[in-house]
Length: 542
Image 1: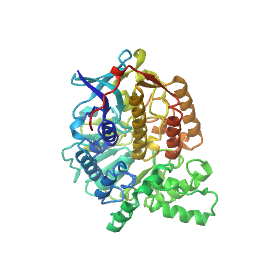
Image 2 (image 1 turned 90 degrees about the horizontal axis):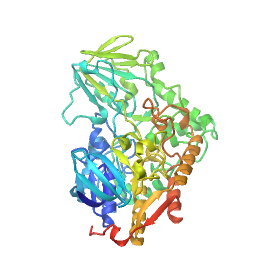
Image 3 (image 1 turned 180 degrees about the horizontal axis):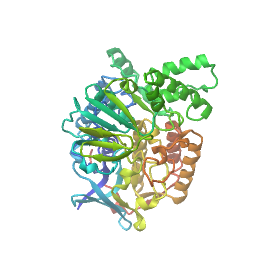
């Protein structure tokens, strides 16, 4: 059984940053990664058209000014291959791979109260003991796979967008189905439509999307960003979203319609996902939101020629951004092509797969390739996949049976020395995740330094603190339009999942202040328990 100071689970953006940060503290760190390479979600989500919805310069690490200056982004919104190249560059440049164990899936972690250490077990039977367990498993890492009758009988090819095969997937001159119209489905539709013999998109819920507004990064733009990176990073950290720009401080209701139209037009054609911040109250006020929703609906309708298709594709049943909106590059226009068809699952649900295709209540569709763009078990799925057992034999899954309970989204009572990165109860998917990730890990580094210097063995959230935080998360959510729709924010993506609001909607800036306040108050909401000198984590050269 190997002994280390910290086990990090996951080698995506968060896991690699955790490794870099903990190694700088002199800790012995091992990263367990289930896949055969680093990259996390950007390793697996390699479907055609996959692209980030945060500007490349903001969706990058801030910990190294040298890295900022040497990496050259080619597009405003980088595609998956470029993001993965960036991650590989970081892993190689900072020699991170030597502490990453690939093809190593954690299946169990159990806390030993007497020894104040975690015992971690991998799928292949290897075990480790560790002082600190840091979960960087991602919110969008456990694909949600539907189980339709007859699915095993289908003689064609079935792939999931969240586990895209490393082999070449052919869609040119084939009859293709895409099931799902979230970000993955919306991004791949226009790409596949260009060469597929026929494409059928199965839609359950129409959602809002705004143009990706992507463009190549010019040399002048690259110079300008690199010359102002510190200010850009500071602005992102002090913004509600971490997107690198501040929202309009005016209300959408303050401006006359003609001015509001100009504001929306400029944001729609430039800001991508940031359109939701064209006015500060779009996500807070239903009347304000209505003005944004009406604008996006109108712009969407203008792209669709067929009036019947228009009725089905334009979302009418929920507020703008109450469900995570997509950014796309020609999604709606793809339906103007003769080889693209919409199958509305509200009108005609899927009955079964057949050897040659999919049967709905309306017709039988013939396919060669079926792509499941059906999303993920968000927020908790990847945390429940291994069995994590804290004090008294309590598992995390049982602790969270009625929904996630955390303090600040990072710690859980009865699970000492367990740190969850961008988990439920933190800004997470309501923010630029990379900004939130680095903020939390820098906070953890400060805590670990204090623990080591003062001989503290354990940190653990108090039961009162986590109850108060959950109440605060719910209070902030009620101030927004988010609870008004069924979405993965509310746990609605899976039958039987608790219907509770999971991320923190108080914004990156507000959350950051609360993290700092917690530290300044001696880590309020946490119990810090001392240990004899022999039990303290050892320092080693980084």
